Image (tube, rainbow, N blue to C red):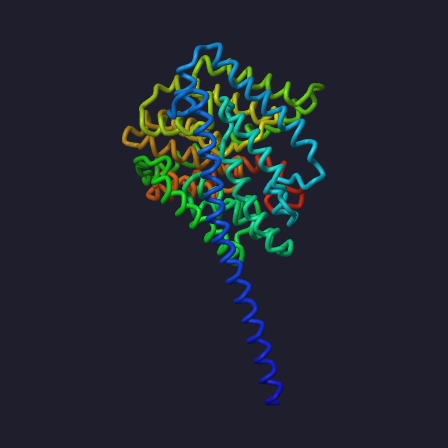
Length: 443
């Protein structure tokens, strides 16, 4: 009896020791991926700054660059960028299909490799679209390149597929955190949207990689919250009731946006013409829209900051919202590579600003800025189906932690209504049908 007890004790100690050793190894590798992912984000950011400076002679941002161009050049630039990006995608990236051309979401789902050449080519096409004035986010390639570092390290160490999956996920989390300076939201994005579940076992490594990536980026760039503003407070019963109603309305528009984006993708795919022609044509329309308002160019980052810090007439906000939303749908629908995260934040901020302006007429003491932030979170939750990520991300990006209760109500309201109307999220094309966050049923 005593010998059996000792053998059982030894087995438990051995298993416990192996598990601790494996956990320590994963945490160490997650930290390394966090550092490498941060430098991948910075490298892509520096590439964009270098290209913008060379093309336009300034570092003031794409909206300022567009404002300084004559109407003809402002129209032709996104078309030329779409043409060049389309040529890269059609004749370089497409020919590599079958050689492991997966993006980071596909690689995480399958536990497969991410190709270095394919990822770099896609990122170059994305940079071309972004720098030329396409209405698309730069964060997509930042996350792709950061996730690539996890894949490269996994291959170098010859790790099994399950470990490779973890490191690619850590790289993606580091990419989001480095791009937006949101360490907690970076890990939640991958857990809630990509992995489809939030567990202690997967969150520890993601949090470590995100926190280290954010720390490295902040130390090098010395940046603070990217949308630092006075968040205001929404705490009275009438204000919170209107938050829920605003979130519900934004949820309806979010479902419509995701559906329209899918239909636009399908329409462009059905056109009997080369990809580069489709992207050039979409770019030409985007360029024409930018002659009305230069804010059409770029991912919407500077426009969000302008909405949060400068009063705008509602007619101007509405016009920019309509033009920018149209440009984003055309750019992404035509096949351009990039992110929709920042354009989505802009659309939400514009809707929240418009709603806040109307609410201010009913409740003169209500904070219009607070409703703009609620709009950002609600629309993000509506199109991604990730309300927790939306709440934390908007809070971290703005330091608006005093707004968390109202943000939670708005995000849950937007998410629930959008999910009822359109069961799949904006990331549905990258997820298998069996993914836990897709094809949800509510009843």
